[in-house]
Image 1 (cartoon, rainbow, N blue to C red):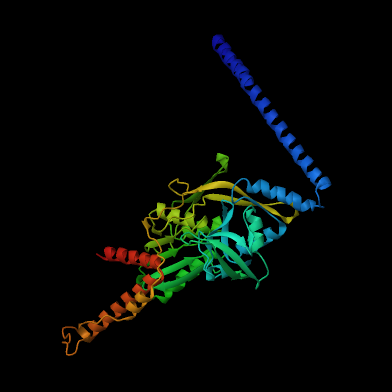
Image 2: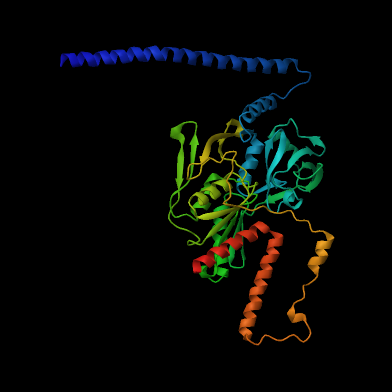
Length: 443
């Protein structure tokens, strides 16, 4: 017993000695690190004082410090930034669904402003701005070398005023100017309509209105269709949706899932990670779903698409999404300003991070840029002759009037679907998939 106690004591003593031996260098390294940090802060203070005293013109000290803070945050990643009191107030208004501007979500790439997506029905959308466009000049002034916030400030202005932006677009040989009239942007988070027997839910952004708009819009379309038995499925259109509130993305995905994980976030410290799970209840009562995405689908849009894809609850159609797989936390600062800081990455239920990779669709469908020539337009305008047009052709007496009427109604539906294919090929493709699923299910 005595030997055991001595052995235990010896082990404890060895542990203490070993711990002291290892911790000593670590503490020394931490001390050196802190000393280096304080030296750098002293250097910052020295530079600030020299600018105040020796710069060729008087400087606004507050602006100087804000610029330094902004530079520090923007050096981390494209989504971390400092928000002045005015910018912080504008952001709070934006999440409520109404604000002034052009109506584009932007990021920064290679020193230029890159359009993540135009927002439906806004001045930028109506002017033809597209996801993936690069803005190189604003009213003739280059944005190269400016921070993202500085470039955005150039694009802001009074409602009703004109702005000319210079755009570089893939596939266009030369940059071109686009004139836009600034306006108050009123976001309709969800637009619902029915195409044939398919309910189309176009989600343009994720703000406080999104889930309530989704629920009411879907219920209205089902009611107008005469009940869920007359609806063959749902198309969730997330194309050119730049994202928004994480909480709303979770609620939208939860609307179509009965159980399971929706998304998880992992920060710098493992204990800060979170998992968000679905609750029982499916707004669509199990109807098949197709999700449409493209290169303008980012952030919250990718959370929804990734969750429904991983749970095999929806078929994802379109092109690869933007690939913004990081979470930003807005932290209030003294003086009514705020800091937007990237604090975590998010992961789909299968554990994949889509940061810089995006969500890959199950079925890749490009949206063709079709520009009909005059010859094509003329050819399309000529109606094809059929047997019924021939003089003296025989009548079809094997069908009743009701059967003929049904054939004509089916033909009208098919022609309407063909028109939709010309207007929006990706959406028409998604609706065709749902028709196919229903046909297989009925057999």
